Length: 162
Image 1 (cartoon, helix red, strand yellow):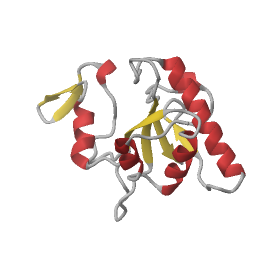
Image 2 (image 1 turned 180 degrees about the vertical axis):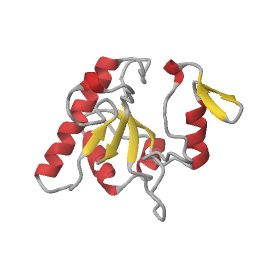
Image 3 (image 1 turned 135 degrees about the vertical axis):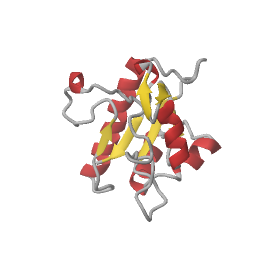
Image 4 (image 1 turned 60 degrees about the horizontal axis):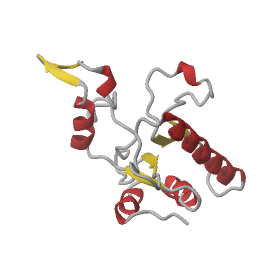
């Protein structure tokens, strides 16, 4: 049975209890790594800068392929940043951990789609049995419509509470 590394366990403790319940169930059968839970404003802003350059007072997209977020952490807050007065975030970035090297495969979209289906299935089952009350939105289906071609920004490792 897979289990989280100490680092993943620590990151999982920075997200809302609902996400902890979901991903503690997921890890029982599907090996994965918690990439991010809670983010500070400065961590969020550093991620926002990827693929952008500062022109005057504005951050302009220079390389869209390198953009990882449209939330700057200040004016536009990420679900990774806890709501005011709270310490736990509403989002987690989680990726499958493969037995064979390379263990983390950011560009393996088939694996990421498969994993997201598993996570959503676990979340739906937990909700159906009354273990959790929230729905989960995946960063590959922001509208939760299963019309994946409608999404202009794909964040295939991102899961957030609805």
